[in-house]
Length: 150
Image (cartoon, rainbow, N blue to C red; front, side, top):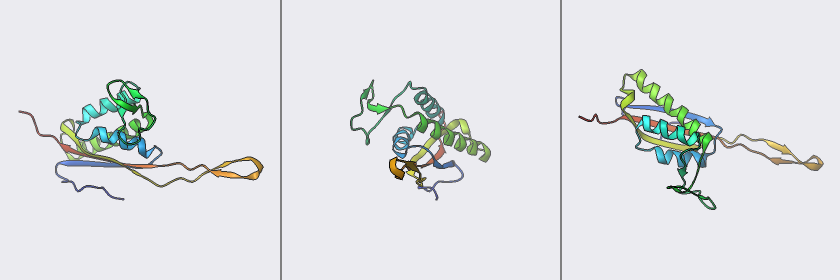
């Protein structure tokens, strides 16, 4: 599995989290909010989502969702926010390793794709069983250097 976008290795830093046990739908909505955000702001935002202080607006999977203050239909996807925060930290440390200015990076691409399904079964009555599968998610983050403000 590769990246979905081509990136200049001189000015960008990349990281992938493969087959993380998180809902792809929640990750998609969180990643949508992060595009174009600076890394320090994104870290604060994800930490406030994980602390249940800031809701994430949902644009696609919003049927029967209750409205949140100043956002509309949304949720607090804690597990997805924590998983994406780990991948952002990895991309940030990759930028430091490459010699880029890690404090002056912004998120160029943030996307989540469905990973493999881990099959499982739940025992039922009379010797039967029901599929009890677990979805996984591949999270991709690409950071690029922001223009320096003079």
